[in-house]
Length: 360
Ligand SMILES: Nc1nc2c(ncn2[C@@H]2O[C@H](COP(=O)(O)OP(=O)(O)OP(=O)(O)O)[C@@H](O)[C@H]2O)c(=O)[nH]1
Ligand SMILES: [Mg+2]
Image (cartoon, rainbow, N blue to C red; front, side):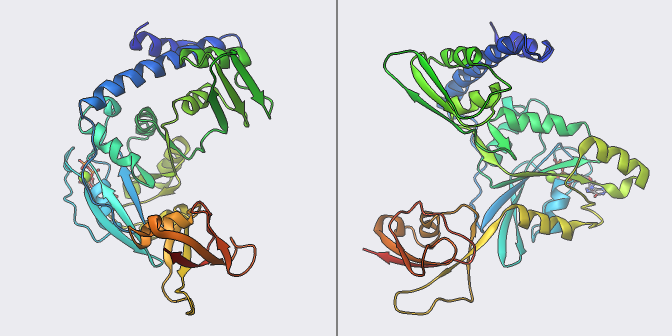
C-alpha cells in the first residue's frame, strides 16, 4: 500500500479495541516506508542543518510559523539583532544569540518559519527541523491569532523523529537467529496486545527476536523503540503577542493552546519570566573542578546538565581528556564517600559535586 493510503487509513479509522491491531500494523508499514525514503534522501546528502557553531552551556531553538515573532523574541532575550519584518519569511537562515542567565550561557537560535509539510521539505523545513534535532531545548512559539498552528508544528516536529517532553520507551529488543518472537513483560499492557507487538516486529523483519517491555507502551512507542533513532528533547509552548488581545480573548485562546507561558516579545511582557523558565527546564547543575593536591575552586563552577557524566565533563574541559582519562575522585552527592575514586566515565554527577580528574 502506498504512503498516502496508509496515512489516510490511520487518520480515518476510529481507534478502539477491535481496530487497534490493524492500526498498529498500518503505522509500522508507514514507518518502514518512511525509513526507506529517508535512507535514500540522506544518501543524496540532502536535509543538512544550518552550520552554526554551538557555544554556551546549552542550545535552545525557537520554532514556529512565519511571522509569529521568533526574531523579535530572540532580540528580546539575547544580545542578538535579528531582522524583524511584518511579512512572512523575513529570516532565511539560522541566527544565534546568547542569553546569559544565573551564570549560565544559553545559545538561542532563530530560524526561518516552518509551515505544514516542513518535515518533508517544504520551505527550509528540513534544515530547521534538523537544527532542532541537534538542540537541547525547543521553544514552540505560537501567535495569539493562530492557536491552531500548535498541532501542525508539533506534528512536523514528530515527523522528523523528534520526541518532545517524552522519555525513551523502556523496551529492549535483541535479535536472535531462530526461535520466533518471545515477549517478556514486567507490567500489564493496556494499549497494545501481544499479537500486535508480534505483527509490528515482523513488519520490521524481527521475526526472530526477544523483546522485554518495562512500561505500558503504545504502538507508536514500540515503533520508536524498534527504529531506535529518535531524539528526546524537552520543549515549552510560548504564546506570543498577548498585547494584541484583551483578557477574555486570551483566556479563550489559552484553553486551546495550553501554553507554558504567555508573553509579548515586542512589549517585553513576561520575557524575564520566560528566561527563568528556560533556565529551569534546562536543568543545569554546577560541577566544581579540583586539581590534585589543591583545594577546589568553589568560585567558578562548570555548568553541566542533569544526567551528565564524567565523560561529559571531560569533553567540556579538553578534547584529549576522554582518551587520557585514568580515574576521577568525586566529592558530593554522587559519591558514596568523600573523594571516592571512579573509573567509569559513565558515572552520573549531581549538582555541586567536586571532581578531581587524573589523567595518564
Ligand atoms: N503586537 C506584537 N507584535 C509582535 C510581537 N512580536 C512580534 N511582533 C510583530 O510580528 C511581526 C513578525 O515578527 P518577526 O519577529 O519578524 O517574526 P518571525 O517569526 O521571526 O518571522 P519569520 O522570520 O518570517 O519567520 C513583526 O511585525 C513584529 O513587529 C508582539 O509580541 N506583539
Ligand atoms: Mg524571523
